[in-house]
Every structure is written in structure tokens, then in C-alpha cells.
Length: 226
Image 1 (cartoon, rainbow, N blue to C red):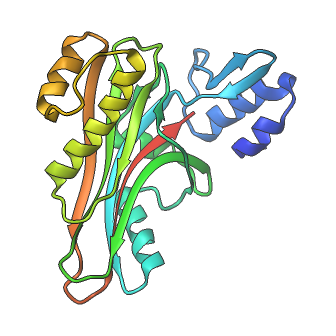
Image 2 (image 1 turned 60 degrees about the horizontal axis):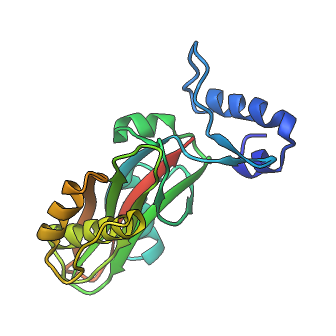
Image 3 (image 1 turned 30 degrees about the horizontal axis):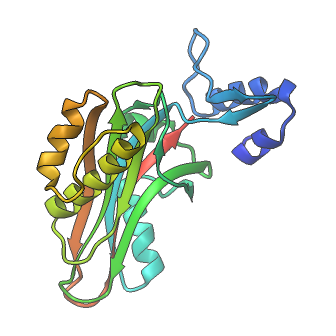
């Protein structure tokens, strides 16, 4: 026991014991009963993250893979076995700080995340990686995370686009009426005035390609915690 795939394969009777093992493993055991990351769906229990933090980084190296490794180090998640997943902000998932989140990670742990990633070896080429976030006003309703990885866009432009993507996906899910051809600033007002979307933001990393042609990699990541 010790990896999430094993927990998924455990019998129903041992799921809670497995969770308590992970609570101790991540170093967050408290005197009160912790919030379980498992929910019941029929006769099965499914893992749903209860916390999330955001981080970003940039790395430069002559080798592409090494530049990615250095970006992971800059973000603080290089010691994890990262597994990328698609882009739903779980219901009742609490955002914690990067510092709090990094303290919960352990070397070699299977770590789920939503990641935007971009790279170039062209000198001075502008690249960006952005995660957009949209949360519903009702904490029991899921939100959206979007990944955007453009060339030639500044932090502000890339971040705004990613935030727009996440908010638009959530708005269509919640049945908010809007004109998709209007500017993001106008739609943002409509979304928030509806009372159904409480928060939108983005986490963006940009960089210019190394002038000597080294690989430059940027990442922006939402890390999901049990």
C-alpha cells in the first residue's frame, strides 16, 4: 500500500484504512477525523481531491527533457511522479497556498495535476503556459480549469485567454446566457452578476527563448491533493 492505484484496487473494507495510511503519509494527521477524499457512487468509492494548489516554473537547458526537469524544480514538484489529468475543479475542493501544498508532497508519490506546458529552442521566441480557473458560487458544484500554451503572448494576454476559457465552459454548464462574441471584460461582468460564478483567475508563466538556443520550458500547474 502507498500508491493511489493500490487504493483503487483495494476492497471496500480496506479503503478507509488505506486513506488513513495516506493521511499519515502526507503528514497531515490531526486529532479530528480528516475529510475523506473518497465519495460513494452506488456500491463503489471514488477518489475526489479535497485540496488544490497552484505553482509555475521555467527551465533552460541544452536538452529538452532537462529543461522540463528544471521547470519542475522551479515549480517545486520535481520529486513527484506527476500524472496529468483533465480539467475539472472538484466540488468542495479547498485552495491552499503553494507553501502549504509543497509540504504535503513526498518523493516518489503519484501526484495528479492539471498542467499547461510549452517549450522552444528558438532564440528570443516568447512562450507561455497558463491555467485558467472558474469556480461556481455553489461549493457543491464543480468548476473548470483550462490549459493554454501559446507562442507570442504575454503573461497578461495568455492568462486572460485561459481565464476566459474556464469561465466560458462553466457558464455554459450553469446555463448562463451570454454573447460569445463580446469581449472578455463584458462577459466577465455578466458571469459574476449572474450570481452563479463566484471567482475566476489565472496562473501564468511566460519566458523568452534562450538567446543561445538552449531549450526553454515553461509550466503552470494545478496540483490535486487528497
